[in-house]
Image (cartoon, rainbow, N blue to C red; front, side, top):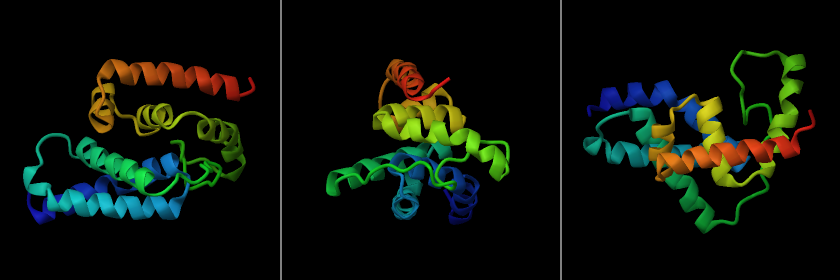
Amino acid sequence: MTRERFITEARTCQGQLRRFLASLCGDTALADDIAQEALVRAYVMSDRFSGNFKAWLFRIAYNCFIDNLRRVPPPAVDLTAPEVLHVAGGEQSDAAFRHEELKRALSRIPEKERTAIVLHYFEDLPIKDIAAIMDIPAGTVKYYLSIGRNHLKEHIRL
């Protein structure tokens, strides 16, 4: 992969990458640090790239996130910051309140379930890409999505 192609591809999914990491760790500054680390790792390994760039980059970022968890105890996840989890649709401040309860509920479910839900429903990735990113079988992704939805229902008042 050429340097120019890497830059183009990285710019295309940079916002989604940052949003994904922020939704996992709840800290936008930490998410930026992990995203930077992931982009550096990806650039160093770009000569080995083939396939879906976004899924490949998200896999590297997810590994960086896991590495960070091993080094540092996880901070309390605060998904209530508006820049952490963006639901598509360009909502204005009044409409954003509709998603506050969802953000709080997401912060209360286990990390693997949250990861699968965020990648599938907010980043619009297919099951096979999520499986590649999380390095688990597709059936396990479906399980995390199912159990995660059930856990969300327990935390969201209907």
